[in-house]
Image 1 (cartoon, helix red, strand yellow):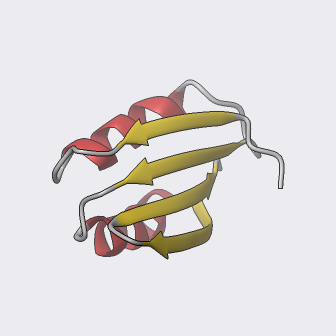
Image 2: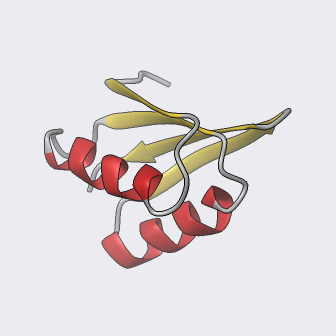
Length: 75
């Protein structure tokens, strides 16, 4: 998977990871992939809801020890 942009949202709590993701996606082209790193455990639920509401595809997400990775495709 080719990543076009990365966003480090580690250490930020809700709603900041989503707000920063929304801003980053607005600067990207359709079909590009945004890679987001987060530490907020609530971000799993938040990113699933965000993708459903905005139409941006949550291509994949991974959970590592105290860290979450998201791969979001710009609609």
